[in-house]
Length: 151
Image (cartoon, rainbow, N blue to C red; front, side, top):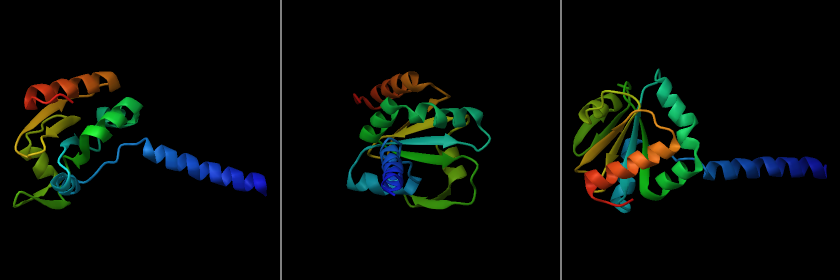
C-alpha cells in the first residue's frame, strides 16, 4: 500500500512540475485584461488547425525550457486561431472574431507571431517556423528593432 501511495504521489507531483514548465496560453481578451493590471508585451501565436509547422512549433519550440522561461518572464502569450469565426471578444471598443483579429493584424501566413507592445498601439510580426534558439534570437531582434526595447 505504501508503494501505491508513493506512486500516486509521484505521479501528481510530476504533473504539477510539468505544468510549471509549460507556456500558459491565454485568450486574447485575457491577455489584454492582464496587461491593464501589469503591463507587458503580448505575443500572439496566430495559427490554423491544418498548419503542420504550427504543430511543430507547439511540439518542439514551445516546449523548450529556454523559450518557456523567456516567454513567461517577458510576455503574455495568446493562441489565436486565424480561421475561427465563432468566438468573439471585445478589443478597443470593437467586437472581433479570432479570424477578424488575425486579418486586422494583417496575418497572411502561418505560423505567425504578432508582438503587441504594452501600450497596445504598435505591433510587429515574426512569421514562420523557427526552432527554439532561432525563435528566441528572432523575437529578441524584432522587439529591439520594432519597440527599441532590450528584452
